[in-house]
Length: 99
Image (cartoon, helix red, strand yellow):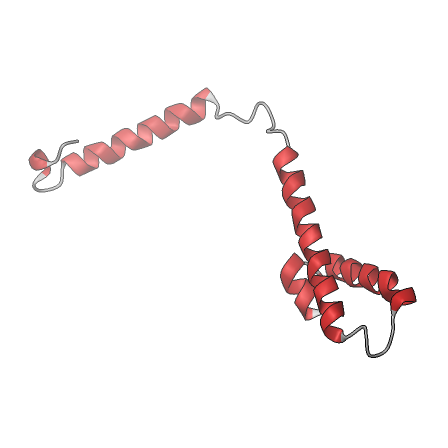
């Protein structure tokens, strides 16, 4: 279980991936043919599929409208910037600086 948890990032999703792999392999299991390396490869591919689905879902998320900074926030940021520039101007050798 450590392998899929490292790949997908959470225990529940990793358990789902492993359960799906074992469910698909249940009727196909043949001793000597189906090896642990094959099972690991199936878990890796299942984990990659989960990560691809997550990436597609994140790309399709619409940005939420109305999250722009308010006028008050913009004014406060501007004032903070002016204070920093005034403080920089007071430093020794400030006349040589381009700001």
